[in-house]
Structures are given as C-alpha cells and as structure tokens.
Amino acid sequence: MARPIWTGTLSFGLLNVPVSLMSGERRVDISFRMLDSRDRKPIRFERVNAETGEEVPWKDIVKAFEYDKGSYVVVDKEDIASAAPQTHDSIDVEAFVERGEISLRFYEKPYVIVPGKKAEKGYVLLRETLRDTGRVGIARVVIRTREYLCAVVPEGDALLLLMLRYPQELVDPAEYRLPEGKPADYRISRREAEMAASLIESMSVAWRADDYQDEFRGRLEAIIRKRLKAKGATTRIVDEHAEPEDAATNVVDFMALLQKSLDENKRTPAGKRAPARKTAARKTSAKKPRKSTRRTGAS
View 1 (cartoon, rainbow, N blue to C red):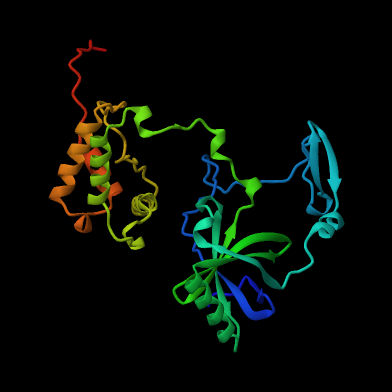
View 2 (view 1 turned 120 degrees about the horizontal axis):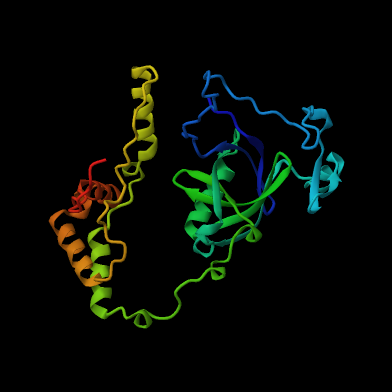
C-alpha cells in the first residue's frame, strides 16, 4: 500500500481538515546503469577533491555559493535551517482565485490530498464549494525543508494539490522573438483561416488520456526483450519517425496542404481515428525516399 509523503492539516480560514499527501504521479522511465564496455562491470562515481584527486567522505563536504569564478562563501547547515520556514504541518490556503486565471506554465507536479479519519465533512465541503464557485485555493506547504507554492483543485471525488512554480522560475515568452501583429500582417487570407478552423474541427475528439501512450518506452522495452532473448546480440534501432530524404523542409502552399488535410479527415471521422500524432507518424514512415539517379564509380 502506498504511504503518504506528508501528513498534516489543510487550513482555510478557521477550518482545519486533517489530511495526508499521496503521490499523484507514477515514474515509469526505464533506468540504465553505466558499465565498463571492456568487462561489463558497473561504473562507480566517487566524490573527489578537484585539486588533489583524493576521495572526500560525506562528513567533510560542505555547501557553498560561488559568488565569483573560483571564489566561494560557505553556507552552514544552521544557516540553511534558520532560513527554512517554521510551519511544517499544514497546507495554508491564503487566497482563492478563478481557476482560469492561472497560466498553464505555473503547474508543475500533482499530489492527491486524502482526508484523515472523521475529516470527510470538511474535505467534501471545501471540494464542493471550490467546484461550485469555479475557484482554486492558493496555498503554501513545507515538504522536508523547502516551502512550495501550490494550488488546491477539485477533480472528481478528489482534492488535488498541484505544485506551482514561482514567477522567477519562469521565462517570460516576450524574451524570445515571437510573431506579433494580426493575421493580415502575415498574408493569412480569410479562406486559409476558415480552412484551418475546419481542419481543427474535423480533428476534434473527446479527450481520452488512455489514447496516448509513451511510444518510445514501448519500443525501447521491445528492444530490451530482443536483447534478452538474443543474450547480448546487437539489435539495430530503426527510427520509424525519421523524415525521408525528399521530405519538404519549407511548406509554402498552405491552401493545398489544408485542403489535403481536410480531404483525409473527411474520409475518416475524428472519433474513429487513432490520435493524429500516430497517424502522421505512420504516413511519414510509409514514404520511400526517391532513388538517386547519380551514377557512382566502382570503389
């Protein structure tokens, strides 16, 4: 059975609801070990002094801030502890905001808030009130030694705690060169806009998360199974998504491309079609590069 990563109270106003935090994600990445290619033995990483090359035990390692190249100021454990927040046992809701006001860029990691024994009434009260008002709670929580900004959000029968990034952790999109102005500034015609809208409509489906799987992980697992059966024989990885040599690199005929896309989607209703990304991948891999007509001399 899963164990809570944090236990305390969910506090809003004068109400305190005993809760625990359970992980809202599952790690499914395939992990690798590094081996010495000569004898297939694991590689061990050691902490060594950059000057002497000698290994340094954990008890002799301190944390420091490099304020200039090669110049450091040591920060003791006591300094870090004094800067850490004092409250560790509550999720303190400071305000409520409209759910749509929070940019998607701020959301980082999900947790599930589970009510404690005999705490269901307060839990349901907050969940249903948030749902009815269309709001989310903005709160702070301390996990281990770090304070996090988070949002308390209703979803189904659950209250979710979604970790939020602080503003200083985000890059302002305005720092990048982005196209500004109106569609007419880029010579986008009304007909192109209408066809693009029709294409989006024809490809629109109900969101079903199970339709989207980690295809890379699946292919990698298949390769690993082949290696296990072959007992170390080399298996060549074929990139099914690689572009053919004659693939267009600069599409300029938007009208023709939109029309072709619309025609294909009319033949296959969106609700009965595999996700667009997978379909496109199959079409790309099905094309064969043109055979070269250039003659080559014998080697």
